[in-house]
Image (cartoon, rainbow, N blue to C red; front, top):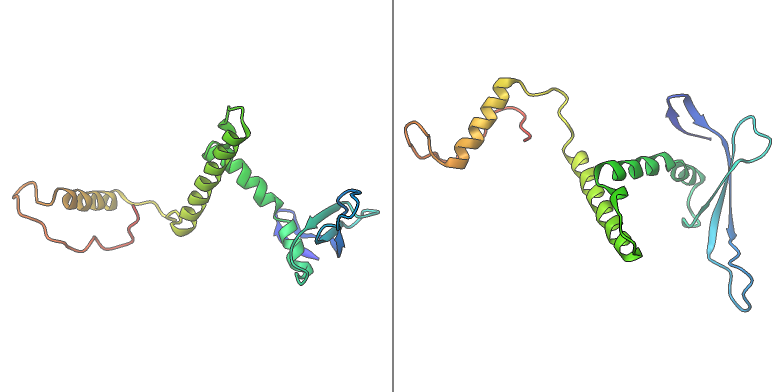
Length: 167
């Protein structure tokens, strides 16, 4: 089964999934844990499966979905690196679990906000020209002061300049 196109071509392996109950230790009169998925990956050219995943997804989850979610590890690693670089996840220097948990929670919230902002307001493909920047700044400044600095005429609410604007 293939799961994505990568820089090295189509990424594919053989996968098998089975529902099982994970042993929680030998405790008398304790029920075993809830059923989970055991996903095994057997890459081409290998003598045996090399990677195993446990998942608590529902019983009706298709194999393709299990594989897709298991292979999102690169995304999780990338998010971790972004949180360290952009929002300071690795800047914590405290000594308590509560302090670290508080810091990590705020970092995750900040990272989520930045991810949402990037999704809602993608970067412009072409940069603004100097006249576009001048026109937008002029419009914003005039709206801010509320009157023309030369003739002191009160400015009414007028439409913003034409063209795509995202400041």
